Image (cartoon, rainbow, N blue to C red; front, side):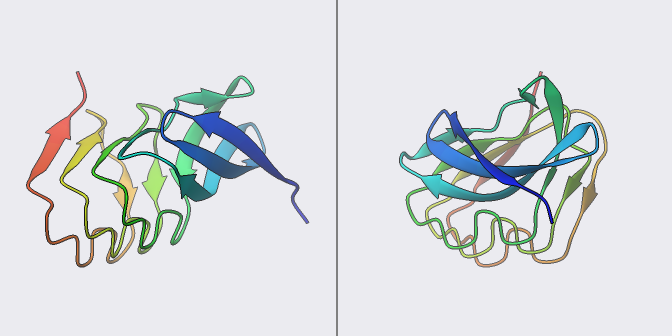
Length: 113
């Protein structure tokens, strides 16, 4: 069983677990409209946003994904009805099903530079 830890990020408290030398974001308590997920936590790369990690976060309007990202799990941002903009890494990464399901206000998917 993995130990779940917390990290205070811009706009949210992230719950995460260590997976070998990598970090997996399990869930978030969003406390602002803008969330920036860091590239590294405890000197390990954030490589995955887990299944349903941000599910139904109504406050969320803008999210910045880390450059270190390799995978976004199923329904990670589903039902975030206020989400307008998502910033994604330049490199390719795998995406689960329904990651942006019913994000009606989503109008911009931007690449990080």
